[in-house]
Image (tube, rainbow, N blue to C red; front, side, top):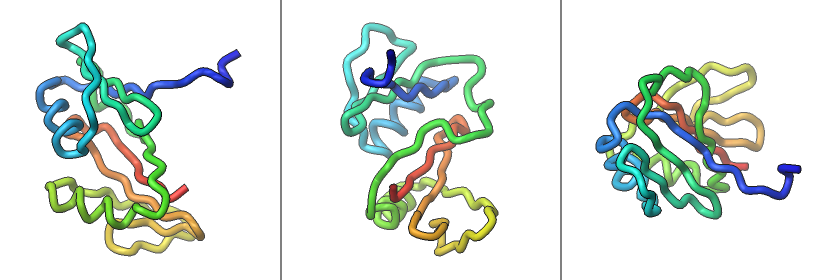
Length: 125
């Protein structure tokens, strides 16, 4: 039923203007026109990211959005760090840290938070 349908990542924020600066400016996502002031949408590759105002923003303690960036994890981490993005460090079994990048076998990953505390991941596959 849903296997051939597109899905949209949805992230709750308290401050929609701060979110617009982060997602459109810092992350460089292309805004998509939406009819409401309390919502922002962005094109991210072949998918969309919906950001909306909610009193529950930042309460999710798990990854909200995962970006499959292939072999670009390190270069994207470097670029985002130069824009002030701080990366998280997690201790997982069988994980080696190379700066902000977690190396788990063939996979490279890095996690960061948006201004509301929503967790995003960059992964190599």
